[in-house]
Amino acid sequence: EAYLARYDKEGNRRIIYYLRKNDIFGEAFYKLHTDRELFVVAKKDCEVLFLPYDIIENCNKDCTFHISLLKNLPDLILHRVADINYRTELLANKTIKEKLLSYLENLSIENNSKIVEIPISLSELADYLVIDRTAMMKQLKKMQDEKIITKNKNKITLLKEGFTNKWNLLF
Image (cartoon, rainbow, N blue to C red; front, side, top):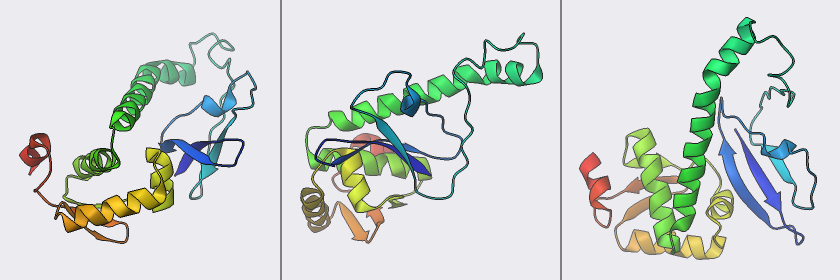
């Protein structure tokens, strides 16, 4: 597990993507250098396979490696596009509550369970959702008071009340 982050001039972190096993990234290795560099930060021990930018051009493309790479490349690209679309949709939510519910609903769907464990720290979640951590904690407390969720550290149980019809249809 790792994340791709950008830091502004004041040192504020913006988490761009979370990377899990078998994810791909190339954003940190643009040929252009700007003052808006991206950093990959490992959360756990990671192995990273570095591929040269021109890897496809350096072979006659008949070797097993290139055949496999070219066969899997469309799936890798589609996976990344799906991740970008999800992130865009998540950040398009206007309120902290909407962002949190969207994120939690997605975790619920991924795990096929109303009980989800946020796989990152709450500070990282706030950075990922581009919201103030204190405001996020207040909203989580309010959601508990409204009986939308129950929370115990990073473990959250989603209750039926307050969720969209789409979510209610899953359970």
